[in-house]
Image (cartoon, rainbow, N blue to C red; front, top):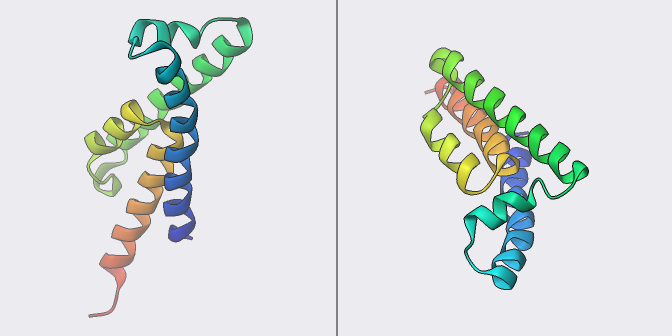
Length: 106
């Protein structure tokens, strides 16, 4: 299952950046304009609000998960620089990977 999460993290990087790069190509690196498009209409605002709420819940979970959370700041950086579609499956992958490394026979 962990390889499915790795694949999802890769796909979760490629697909959003496909759209992000189109916007950057059309308008340049205008961060304020880019973020304002996320609230351009009620549908976009709903998707953006959902993403922000889900991201904050993900961050809170990582910091309250105790020893099972591998390097939360790295996954917050992924969340902010790429998106939750990459950060969440990457977190699941690394959590399963580190769990299997601890339980592997010596």
